[in-house]
Image 1 (cartoon, rainbow, N blue to C red):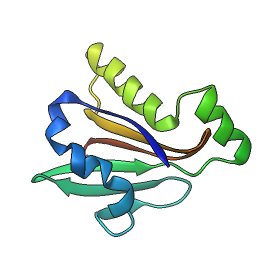
Image 2: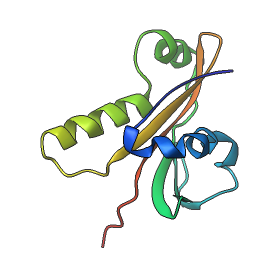
Image 3: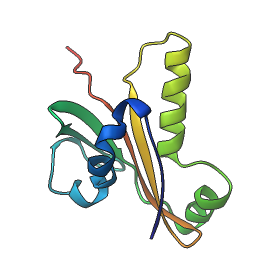
Amino acid sequence: MSVKYNISSKYSHLKEAILDIKKNFPSSGESIKSGRNHLKIIDLDNKRFMVKSFQRPTAIKSYTYGNIFPSKAKRSYDYANILLSKGIHTPEPVAYIDYYKGLQFQESFYISEYYPYV
């Protein structure tokens, strides 16, 4: 299985823990939404992060995301950076990770800073 990812330079010291997200996701963190996508709050290096695991794509979308369009996780990461560059408040993007089997896109994760909404 191959991996494509981008980790914000601010969080490069967490690279190993971030790349272990897939392995640790089922058993770690506090689940706050489960369904089509799964959201969890996890703690890394004494800081809280939001991890979104996107639903596995259908066979057609698996090829499309692997070869034509960026994954939802990559788009989430990119759009969060665009919003921040325009002065629009949004949780700071930490990383995205995409997993592929050959040319077929398998699954992805988007990680951002956790902001509690009160």
